[in-house]
Image (tube, rainbow, N blue to C red; front, side):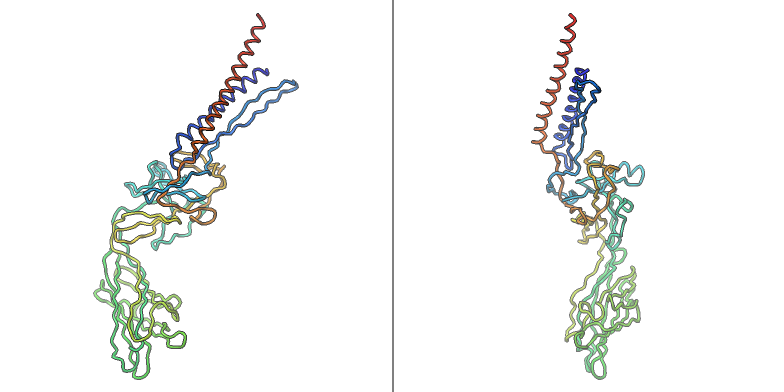
Length: 432
């Protein structure tokens, strides 16, 4: 019985070391595979009860193969803007192309790195057949408050392959009107400003603004009539406002009140009013009441300071950019860029509890725990690195050393079996 247990223990040792050699060979084969996580084989002793007999019964060994998903390789630079890696904790959410095509619903898979290109349908896809996923942005580029403990809201990142228009929706104006123009005896000359905007089909239009001072019989009025006309409507008036400036100590030159004749009411807290042009509505920010930075009335010169606005002409998308916070922007040949998605980073309690699938990709399981979607750089997560890939976690020197040890252990177990065979042969010879 003891000799038989020795034979079984030797066989289990051969089997365990053969399995360990398989893991080592897999690690070495993937030493150049981006994002690969090495497999480690652990041995556990099996203890057999010897019953009432004093003879020892060999139990042998059991093995456990563990993929160390939480141990990544070094980050290296590449020449592609949509080659992505994670500098720190967290993984990128992806979904299988085949599964998404079959069901229309994404399945959450995770990867630490990937090389993505826009495919024929506009999806940001890897050569291994996975779509990168993200939260779609609103029209203004902001990301709505999506749930963080579920993939509801996540979708494969897809770009329009056709021409797109980016209409103007907001304009910020900062300029100075001459205070001397509202004094008694001033000539009453109007000041003129023209602002270009883009309509819903990408056509360049303009809003013409005329500032006409109110000239009093005596003293100073501090009043200007601002009339706005739209070129797309044949010069129709879209805004008519009477602006009164403050002339008190400390607040002199800032907006005091704005009364509307045409257009929406001016909000003194935000400095915004809305005008309706042929292509939609545009928010104008001329500065809050009592604050500097918008319209002012100082000195004796008309001085446009700055005009900032959104919108652009019709353009072709020429590239894609991903920043360290995971925001995905499309860049157009018009020089404009627009945030379209945000890629969250997924964190789990036990990365090593996930199951591996093809393409250095992993599937969350009950053993990995509940996942949470973080903004890159928030909580425990790291940042997203563009123009980067993560190398294999395999250490060739360590694997070759382990291979030598495994070979020696295998040979030793084979020697045990050979010795047991010789002992059994001696037992058989005793009958002769």
